Length: 258
Image (cartoon, rainbow, N blue to C red; front, top):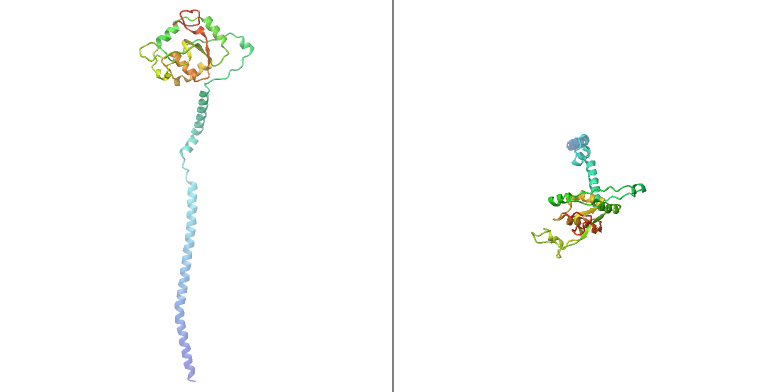
């Protein structure tokens, strides 16, 4: 009977000891759960905040006005299309200059071939000496022979008609027919073949070419040399006609003795 109380006391001590050791574990487990719930809640809240901020940023970017570049502004103002048309016109102009503004002549009908020749005789006054031009204008030119020559060559394009010759280049300053740019004609100092004198006949397409490109054509001291150098750069047909050679011996030639 004495052993029973002893056993009961021992069991009570062990039970009380187990209760004391399990309380801190329960407290730690409770705080661990609370901490886990807190961290999970913060993470979930941060995820929601990030999602909300991303949506707001996307909405602001969509509503933000687009930054226009210079190209966009030109497109809005219509300048881009105008620039494209200017480039196309410049390309057409370059192509036309390379062709010399030579247009294909349409075949004439029988009725038009029977019409009288309408010839325009003029002096290109864009170059040359003033006194020489006035003398040439005031001189007498027999129109009958000149009109006959023009009528004979009326259907010929790219015609370069004149008294063809080539002579020595005068390189000594002070002499008659001095050429300041004599060194450009080579070591032989000889002119290329050209229509000499004051009277030169050009077809309509060649005259149009000179008139259009006069600002960029090279000129020399003498008019006939300048025109001859221009004819070397185009597909001109050289026609030597001695009736255009000025001479005091043959006054019946179509020529001005100026």
